[in-house]
Structure formats: C-alpha cells, structure tokens
Length: 514
Ligand code: BG6
Image 1 (tube, rainbow, N blue to C red):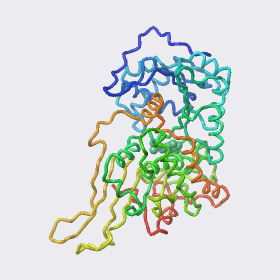
Image 2: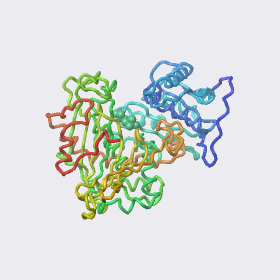
Image 3: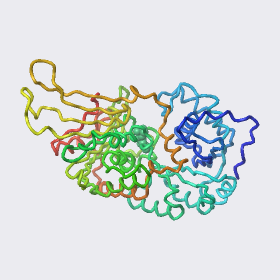
Image 4: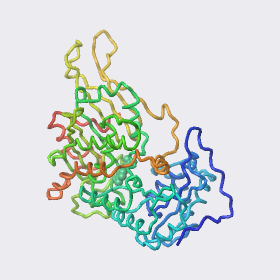
C-alpha cells in the first residue's frame, strides 16, 4: 500500500524556468483523496499542469491519487491524459487550452501515482504515510460527509504530525458544514486532530484574479476608500447569476440548495473583499481578522429579508432547459431553492444604514458575477435641463466574470448647447491590459498552500460567522412548507426578488446591461 517512488526509466523532462522574482514552492507530496472524482479531473490536475508551466513546482514534487476504485498508476495517468486532451475540444470546460504541451504534461504525469485505499482505513493510510517524504499536503477532494472521518483517520494513522520543520497540511473543500451547528462540529473534529495553521479551508472564489483584485483596487488606490462608506454609498449588490442548471449534480444539490451552495462561502467572500476594513498588513491573520470583524457586524438575516426561487422549464440562451424538478436526482416535488436573494445589514461605523443585497441563482437569463456599489445622488439640482432625480446614480461595478475588470458609471454632458447630462461608462477590462496566463482558479490556491500562505483560506471563525448570519433563514425555510417561488428558466429569477428591493424603493442592476 505504501507509495513506491517512481521507478520509470524515462528521465523527467526539464522543469520550465521559475520566473524571476517568483519563489519555487518547496518539495512536497500532494495526496489527493478522491483521485477519480470530478474536481480532481476538471480542476486540480489542470491547475497542477498550469503550475508546472509557470515553473513554480519543485523537481521533487509528487502527487499521490487515492481512491477506492480499482486502478493502477498507469491507468490513472492515461485516464487523466485522455481527459486533458479532451478539454482541448470542449469550449465549455473550465480548462480549454488549444493544445496540451507534451513536455509539460510528461513532467507532471511522471510524478503521478495511484494508490487504492479506503479513506477511513487507518492501516492503509498509515502505510501510505510511511512512504511519504517530509512535506505533505492531503487534499480532501471528496464529498463533505467524509471530511471529519478522513481527518480523524489521518490523525489516527499518525500522518499529520509535523516533525523536524516539515509541514503536513490538509485542504478541505466546500461545503464546510451545512449550517452553523454542523460547521462548528466539523471545526471541532478537525481541530481536535490538526492545528488551525495546518487547515486550508478552500473557497475557489478566492482563487479568482478578479476577486483578489478587489483588495488591490480598494487598498492600492486612494480614490475609492474615502467614498467607500455610508455617507456616499446608497447600497451594494452582490450577484452571482448562472445560466447553467443543476445538470447531473441533483444528488448533491437536493440537500444543499442555492443558499448553502453559494452564500456563506462564495458570496460572503465577495462581501468581505468589498466591505472589510483595511487589514493592518496583507498577512493571513490580519486579513482574516478584518474579515472576522466584518462578519461579526452582520445582523443575522431576518427570514423576511430572504427570497427563494426554483427554476421551471424555460429557454436559456436559445436552448430549452428542463425544470429543476425534472432533472436527474431531483425529487418531483422538491422544495430545494435554485435561487436566493437576501438583504444584509452591517452594524458598524462604516456601513450602518447601507443595505447589502445578495442574489444568486441557476437557470437564469445571463451569466455574470459582479459587485455593484451604487452611490447616493448629488444633493441638489444644479444643471438646467436635467432634473436631479433623473440623473442616474454613480456606480462602481467590480466585474468578476465573465467580464473581468471594473466599470464606473458617471454622468457626463451631452455634446450641444444645453447643459444636459447623461450616463456613460468608463471601463477597465483585463484582456485590454494583461496577457492572461492559463488559469482555472486553483493555481494560486494550490501554490499558496504549498507556500503555507493562508491569506486566501478560511479560518474556523470566519466560516462559523458566515453560517451564523444565514442560519435564521435556513431554519425558517426548513419549517415553511410553502416552498420556493417558481421562475421560468432563462429569466431574471423570481418576482419576489424584485419585490425585496422595490420595498426599499430600489431595483436590481439589470442582468443584461452591457
Ligand atoms: C460551486 C458551486 O462551488 O461554485 C456550483 O457548487 C457553482 O453550484 C460554482 O456553479 C460557481 O463557480 P464559478 O467559478 O463557476 O462561478
């Protein structure tokens, strides 16, 4: 059961050169539990391949894929190779390169090894651990119900004890718990085996350049911060709208729903980036302290400030979509929400009185993830020909995806003799300025984990604080048999979501605005 070192006779291709100024990660073995899973194939292996290309991995880097499936190292490598090749023909894949670089792939492939083991078999994991070099990372790319057991198995097998300056780390995927109580219990079990500094709770939104860029925009420029507060901001919207439906993920999605799937994790990360106070430094503890301070200021959400919807059959981007209840693995009378809209209140000096509206849904008419910071209107009418009430408000839009960048909406004078104002947009787009390097969003996270940098990972208290905010809604919905409001796939979501803002005299930023 112990991993053998690679005895392949073929010499490994030379590693691409590490770029000047970049630090190559230390030697390490990455043990992936869930080697045959979707996450490993679609995202982790492409991310590792990209890291090879950027020259950031050590020649002694290794990957051991662990799963219960009968397989061999050769078969696992071949399967992954075929998968990587298939991505080149699949424009919908997260990783869609024109071709796979043979030397780059070989470098990685020669370092891949497969071990068949049951994740909860202490003896098997101990045997695996016996063959590991000093530094190792255990990546739990497995269903969340196994997280605690696997961490306990790692502890019982003695493979996560850190000796002689070497590190042993554990990466835990989402969902981390399914409500406040289960998240606390999971943290308790994980932290009874590991020190917090060994735990890397992942949220892939933090791997996105555009999400990290929110901090760069806010704290690397002086022009935003003075306005970033309740004196000037009317409200903030955070949207993650998806066109895709639940597809083949019914079994996962049914007990999860849009709120658990997206809000306390991804949307709260966007919220933190936008609303937290400037951290003292950019180190992990300062950033996570700043997030914690913000999350603690969130009033637990009043269920009356929450709307849930579920998509019915419709047409999305010209193609018919079956209703959620007709999807594989979904109960015919399911009450699981595929859409959620919420209003958050933040009781702190900066944000008191500024509502944060969050919405996310599947099967919608457009795909866009963005944060809209809408400013108050100018205090008085000054220009002839333009009523102040008619002037559109200023907005700063942080475009996360698919548009990547920043949009500023301003009032400008229409050319002509009249002083007549209209709204215009000023835009920064990544693709206009930067050459993008291939990225599936996990590269930075894997690299940071190798480097021991926890800035982009969730601390136990951050996770619990986010669950605490949404817990009243989860509890209220569990008791309420009315269920979600149906919306036709391909539209902007349930009417109730519009009513949530209309109640406050506001409207969502249009999903189809260019
Ligand atoms: C995942 C959710 O965590 O994030 C999915 O489980 C969702 O339901 C996905 O589609 C969205 O991520 P991205 O990067 O595609 O916006």
